[in-house]
Image (cartoon, rainbow over the protein chains, first blue to last red):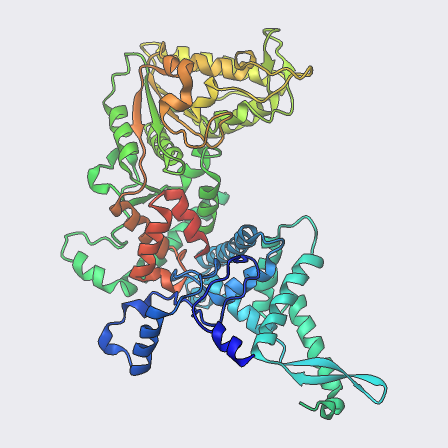
Length: 229
Length: 368
């Protein structure tokens, strides 16, 4: 068995290559998408980076995913949000909705900016990206609840959440809130922009949901020692 | 009264933008201060708001439309995204570009005792044909001409909700809804020159026809003190096909529509004392391929023969200087918010992604 395993760890490609859900041989290396990595001159690299470069010249590289770009405007958080919004693989539509949302937020803020008197202009935040990121941060819960079974009964125990889980929950709540609890004849970008703008100022249904979760966790503090990890 | 408030607000923003610029754009100020009259705004703006006084040295610069002119001149006729931009930025700015300047110079020098000259703006999608047309119309308005602006001829040949048989000529069809909206907008534009009432909806298409005939005859008279400009957007609709169907599901021929019939009579250059400025448009046109943008392809044989002879004016995408100017304008109006868009790399990427097409640049900068 050991012999066959080590025999597999060499450059090979299967005869039939599945495109969807394809699992690469671990021999393949991740692609480097950032432009800055290629503009560094030889002298600035440390020994490890030089080794990495040598390795990349020999080993095969995985194909880059289609959602990843080397554009200066690419944002991983935004890409994640677009993927979560996507349905039936329609990334074009999801990205269109996202861009319309950002444009809508910016339009409202810039209009407010141009109509505001001189003293209040600095307070108005016009950048839709900062507003979006700040709104997501505001929506992230600090603790989550986990159902733990002890002595035949199930208790809701407060547990710490990892960063990934927290940002996932924030994005999920935002999307489900906009899909379910708004008037059906408004466009998604309109609903999203309203919800993001209210989350930016700590208002709205998503913030309310986060606060309710926090309250529940606070009330169940006594069961916190049921957690064993 | 709302107009006064808008102009006051505009004046306030103008003064405040001036102070913002003197504090922030220090480097440019030093360079400019050498001139006798330092411009308070930056390089991409010009103070010359009168199209008659604009010349080659203003190419690529933005001039602000006075708010008193904006409401009467453009109740219709501007692209939708541009109208939203005007609302957001609280000002209407046009860029001075070569095609519009060329047509304005011809309009200044033309002999108006000869038959009307026909100008045709053509170019790829989103290159700025409608905006050039609106610039030329603004010039005519400032000169005191009567403006007959049809915002989009394609709207008259498709999606017609009401089609009535014409009272005047039984073979033809009327479109009361489109005619009334157009008459209302015409009245807004030319209120200061004419005084006519538009009340009855049913005969509105005939009213339109009578109005056009009247204006044509009046401007042709040698003693007339006014000139007529006929501005039509999407003129290739007049010689294309229509999707309107009669009750027995047979297609309506374009000759059977009163509005189109009267408009075609206007397009013929048998009248004097004015000009005809038109634009081609593939976007709203019916049964034309997406890649077509040249006059021959979009007008078809009949259209080209009827429009012949005309002066074709090509409207290209932005040049380097114009792109630079548009980029600076968006920066100034706080429209480009992404931190990376202010870097050199971001600018190069914008230029590449939009391939310097005005409408693509506008769409991309919308979410950045």
